Image (cartoon, rainbow, N blue to C red; front, side, top):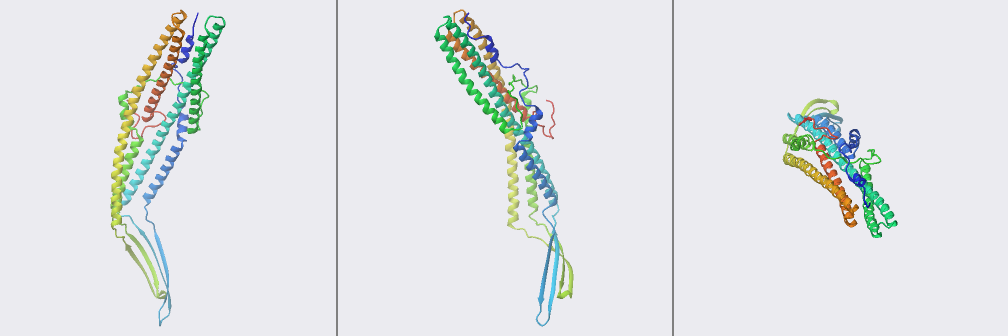
Length: 417
């Protein structure tokens, strides 16, 4: 009976069932890898700087200023006298300035807290990207390796038939050509898998990788309707909350700079001794810098920066809304594409089984069977890539909604929708 490829070949090409093992790293391992990333470490340092700056703003820039002087006076016709003077003074913020300084410091901390959370968010997206690149590359390499083994088995079977004069040498050459193409694809995909693994370990060195990559499972749409994810993503965007805090902080700084057109006065105490101690005194003094074009220019610049921050906020809002819309659209399109690819793979398998039976009965030519065999392998690759793409889109949706490896924004609790 002339049978080219056993049904086992198709079982190796089919995707794992939906109950296959989870293909993502453990949540605690992923969280630790995210927190150890340099992007997060830099954001943590920026938060410490913002905290220190808030303390500086609360304390104010003014400090006590001490001054002292000594003079030796020589009066003609008289004698020489030792004279000295000393003073201590301090400037004080006018009413309203200290409150704005404290508010600006608090908003600076709030902004950097959101920047830190957004750094974790961006790192989580990077982790998902390099992880799925490795998982996908390993899956393609596994698929191509299975294809090579199937061709090798059929080459051995055909060689026996040729030896028994049950088949022509041309048939063996045709299978050999198919095997060579399969080996070419396998070598290429194995190299790509190795590169993807190195990229993952380089980006996240603390991530312990298994020897064999997990297989990507069949994608499944979330229980929450896709239309509801838009509001969730926008509400939980730390990048948007950072822009909101920064816009408010710049507005506070603009009000503060406007008040600074009236400079803070300095009050001090002065003591002195003249004519060798014959004259002594204690006095108070007040000094006020007279504001001019410089202070007006600073106030105008602060007002312009506040206006720019409002524009940045609107741009960020539109960007996040675009991200939410894109996430939803990519999930819809990639999931639909995978469904079609899966249907094509199933249909291709049925067609191949029938063709194989026709070949066994002598009704189908070997060349036609080999052509269909290669087509079936391409369908398997297409289904695998579509499955990976759909899972990547779902991962990005979950990460942008802060429902994977991240915590929602504290002002927007994780409500069930």
